[in-house]
Image 1 (cartoon, rainbow, N blue to C red):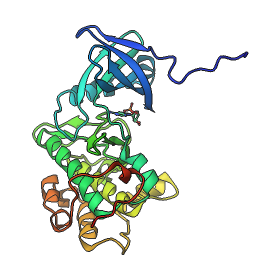
Image 2 (cartoon, helix red, strand yellow; image 1 turned 90 degrees about the vertical axis):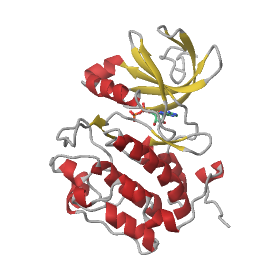
Image 3 (tube, protein in one colour; image 1 turned 135 degrees about the vertical axis):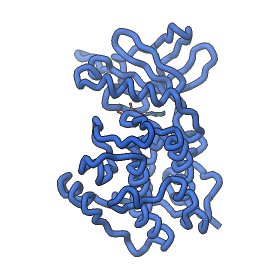
Length: 297
Ligand code: ADP
């Protein structure tokens, strides 16, 4: 054998130490790749508790001038405590990496779920969205805007519960202040961000509308062949809800996806929408729902 095959993640340390709290973690399975590093399952060697460990390369963060973004992500995420938000357990660093210890979500994200399922049923949409809305209600009550709600940031744990993660684009607002700047491009970007008009919590509601559309239709509302065309459609709020969707689902999407942010419902309004109050919502879902539609009797 002439060439040594590099084991996945072998450049990352196999044991990491949070010296402040004197906790040692062992690096286990690779979970996924992020923009600035990789995510692994890690185990506290003292008690066997498992977590998701984000290994963020300091070199890469510095190179892309993303230090501020990382500091912001940590400073916001560490203050949050909600059953539908990925729990933040701690962070520490060595010369090469910043390590972030997070609640492990073993069933990956809703992006992978949708790759398999293509579309999901309305009861499932109610099940997932109710959890997302309760987390976003908590964020908005605490003057935080997530700003990048998308399927890949909605993680699923071993009990099939949803947890919002990735606070890399999130921001805190003070006394109704409108944000005018942002580093990064959110996936389900609202028209007021594209037009740099100043934005607030309504951008999260917009993203929830895009998520709901995608879950029910199988593709995002403003999808086009080019990015430019997508932006154009967003600014004109040009989309079409397929006739196959129920009236309640169609009405809720149409209430959310409006150009004027102040005309959009708030998260509190959405929780009380007919879509949720009129239809069946399962209390739990089996993990078979990751690959096939459930049968509701
Ligand atoms: P990003 O650059 O998109 O912020 P992250 O570093 O947050 O990427 O995550 C990279 C990948 O690691 C994700 O796509 C996901 O597959 C996995 N991951 C992130 N957080 C968790 C978690 N809490 N539990 C399980 N897997 C996770």
